[in-house]
Every structure is written in C-alpha cells, then in structure tokens.
Length: 138
Image (cartoon, rainbow, N blue to C red; front, side, top):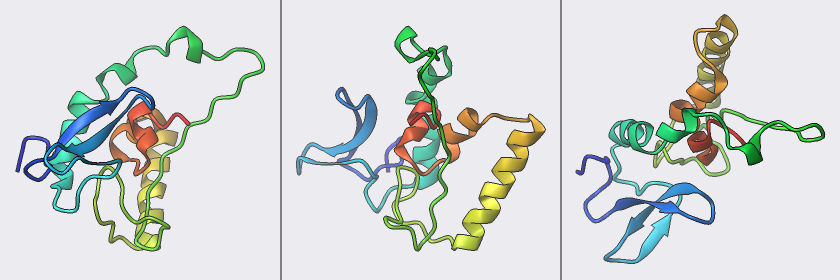
C-alpha cells in the first residue's frame, strides 16, 4: 500500500480539463474518478486533504468571484449503500445505511450552524462528491 492508500500500480493524477484529481494505473492504462476497490480509504482521505486541496482555501480567482447576476452553489454529499453509485473518491464501497448517512449529515449541519466549521471546510474531507476538491463548489 502506498502513502496515497491506493493499491500498487495506481497513482493520483490531475485532470487539466476538469481541474480535478483522478486515479490512473500506468500498467493497465485504466483511469477512473473513483478509487480502485482495494484502496485504504482513510489513508487516501488524508493524502487528498494534504496534497490536493491546499490551494482551495485561498481566495477564489477573479473569474469565480461573486458578480451581480451570478449564482454560486456548494454542497456536501454523504452517500449510502442504496445510492445510485455507492462509491466515491473517499470510499470504493459505501456500506452505510440511509439513516446512518442522514445522521452524519445532521452532525455536519450542527457543526456548520454552531460556527465551529464551514460547509467548504467540511466538504474538502467529508463529501462523497468530487466537488469536495473545490470545497463543494458546483
């Protein structure tokens, strides 16, 4: 297992067209947005938080600033085992129930409302959506 948490042969690369990291196996030439099944999810989560989100905490570039007439939207997604695709960049196989996912979301909501964290800060490490790398920005 590598420092990334990915199985041997896999690496994290960066998509220039989508400005997002993805997973690539140079031997098989396979690329994918979700991590391979043998991935250590906790190690990958730590690696991605440390190396692939550092510049997301800075101010948004001028092209992304709020301008009259534009709307910005961000979210934090917690998938469950009955989701359309029960896998994510954080977990290759999601096994939590819908109720467990709702309880996790309620915990996130309470932390955001209390002011102890922001949606963007939580999204970076806790969202199952690839938008996590952009602080949940859609």
